[in-house]
Image (cartoon, rainbow, N blue to C red; front, side, top):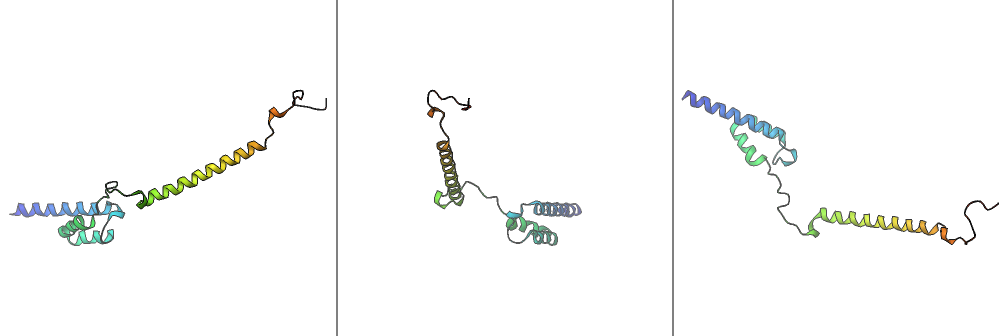
Length: 123
């Protein structure tokens, strides 16, 4: 009987330490219910029950990411990307127009008369 109680005591201590470490290192944004400090206090004050509550309630699940399909017009990330793409296209169009205007302002070397030579004209 003593061995059984000793084994249960060790199991309780190991489970409490595991719960405490898991709570302390768990990602802050995924903790549900109450803040991390309160969960640590609950785990310490109620060794088995606190650990069980932490794993059942406090430990949030990882979001499934792309499991849920969303229409493009409901996805804010997609809509934001459209706005960035449109702004980038407009900027590229303006830069191309500025370059075209600069090219139009430069004198063309083919406009010289046949006898004209580039360089000094006072000789």
